Image 1: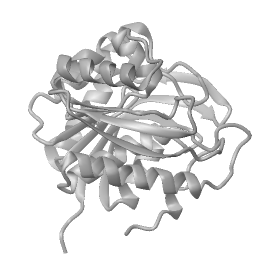
Image 2 (image 1 turned 180 degrees about the vertical axis):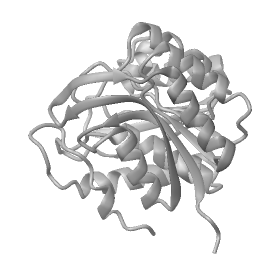
Image 3 (image 1 turned 90 degrees about the horizontal axis):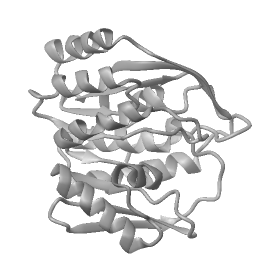
Length: 264
């Protein structure tokens, strides 16, 4: 039997289990990967918001990463919430020798609206994007990273194409924050070519951890050897089904039903 692909998730912990490292582990496991973690921050949060954030020492994060990579290795890496500029800089240094795929989800704000990255940390994102295989910003994050207006589909494409060309990486501009009834995600390559994925919006408040789930799903599928476009397509299907299977927990933006998605 072929061993599972090795996926390292570098992200913050979500005490309520809906997002961050907890969502990463659930997703990687459900998609047949072997999940390893380097926790960057500890949060007290639930479906209604983030009550407290404590970034870990950068040296501890560095040691977690080295412990995983020096012994087990990784076929792909997912990077989420970083917590501090020092951690961001350290992660960049650790990734210089990594041959596997790197999926970077530039987490700035939680689904509840709570800020999860300060300006200095966001400024350090550039070096990570230079190294990433794929960057997965939502629309507010894309606007913050480019300083461009995103009022139309053409403007969203132009911003994603600008980011992709600047950092020589693929960009998945997620359309979940758009106003329309249908959601369009755009996968844009450094040469400006684009593939669009579209689906009807699922009317639900249970979307906590969708970005974490999507990025870790893509990383896992890339670790399995899937080409990027197909990995994005399959990962989106996983997220949509997890939204449909949400258990309904909490009084705010509830968690997804990772556990209920049957692998096909």
